[in-house]
Image (cartoon, rainbow, N blue to C red; front, side, top):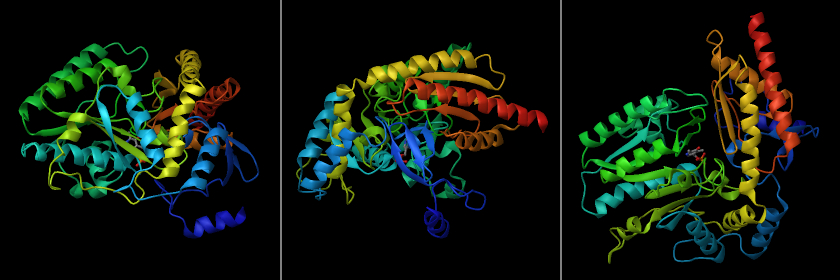
Length: 440
Ligand SMILES: *Cc1c(COP(=O)(O)O)cnc(C)c1O
């Protein structure tokens, strides 16, 4: 494994990494269930599901079998002018699981491209309808929708994109109202925000193509949760103004927040929905942008001009489709939503003990997600997050704070004993942080 480190150090450029300061990363040799194992076979609990992708657990036997079977049958075929059973069956299953008339599935390769596709579809939808004035996109402040140029544009308020600012197209932002346990003035804050949003919608009458949202949970900015009723109110308002509504369920889809899709908790059927991450149970990159029949119909014509001229080499890759199909079947075969409900019950109990902790505030729980904000001891917040990341890793826990937010988002197969290890680890880690800050 020393070779791996040597090769990596010489040749690899890692994502979201400052190689000027970053230490040599652990080499992960294998993974099983909720755990990763390093080269010396030390166990690291994967408490953020390898960037929120792993759902049923690492190296799941049923998914492995589905993948092997598909590989023996057909690894890939181009998807323009051809189709194949795995893609067709997956599309039908996804449409059945989604609410309302979300009936048309467009395949691409990752969360960012699913967002690009949704933005382009929304933009061209209005052109195809002859409403060329609708060119503006609305997004929430603090939104993250991926790292390609369109996705960065709608996510520019998250603050990650300073070097590219001049490259991004215009997007207006509206307020996201986050909430937490014991939040007392949420009604007043939501009402004030809704008034601002109504004003933005009115001021840009007939100019807005679409509103894009991370439904209920804003992930990358620091696991901010809003009330489903707030999402519903904003979505209804946008629709009343004729604006298309895009739900980016890349992070929250496939059970993360306790239901298969977050839109179910909101009670709203968007015009376009983006799915990725959990789609393939964390196995491989693939994404879907699902459109309503009404959106699809606006692209129908006798000539090519109104068609959606977009596609990727690996569109609807059969291996990824077979994995995604098996993953959806597992949700019923393994009663996965009940497992998530159980994780939520455990999170809730731990959240109640955290309330009394001097280092934690703004505690929030929904489905498989538990998050809290580090109380800002002497302006230490993000340094504290960095310190905790290292502490957790050296204690066998993959927990990576986002700035001052510590959170858990485990694979759904996590056991009670493993959850207890995670909770105990957080309390111990916070204790180490408090000691360190007291000594500073
Ligand atoms: C991760 C994420 C994306 C981007 O997905 P990638 O697969 O990393 O490109 C988009 N939207 C949301 C909400 C995400 O969490």
